[in-house]
Amino acid sequence: MKPKHQWNLLNGTSKFKFTIVRHPFRRIISTYYDKFIYPEPFEHTVWTPIKQNMLKTLKHKIFTLNTFLLYIVYSIQRNLKLNAHWERVVTVCGFCKIKFDWIGKYENFDEDVKILLKHLKIDSKISFPSHKLDLNHTKLELDDKTMYDMIKSIGKKEYNVLLDYYRPDCEAFNYTIEDFETKT
Image 1 (spheres, rainbow, N blue to C red):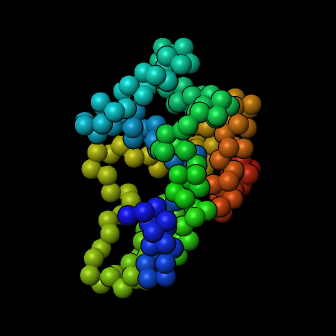
Image 2 (spheres, rainbow, N blue to C red):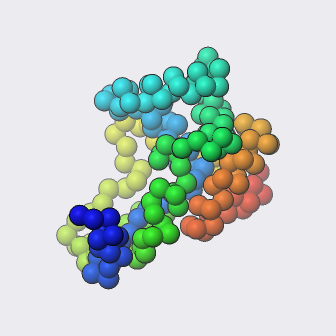
């Protein structure tokens, strides 16, 4: 299928297009834990070399959340391509080209999924598990202050690089970083 035809399909009125987004800082922290600290067994072969490259690039010996955050800052400052797991959502998901009919938020997952299933008229046919369901117990539920403190721990200058870089996601999906900054 030609790319132009694919975009026409994605933007046609016969398809209901939806996505679920997450606060960019929550995405970063989640990626760190899900991919580097508690990866699925088959994922080690993918993520271990990426982690080793980050350590080598930054000349660090131990891989921590700060190492990961500093690598993202390093990449942003050098205009390097970011992995889709920590790139801005507005960049990787074609939000400028795809006209989504509905955008839900991970932070409101349980409520938003009910709305989505009802809109699709399948709420009586299927149920969606809670986002809190995690058989491996590796997911983190962080309050805003803890999330903010974790990100801000890299230093003010580096934090501001992240803040500026992820601001388009915050603006596109109505996330306000300044709101949780005032909670500290």
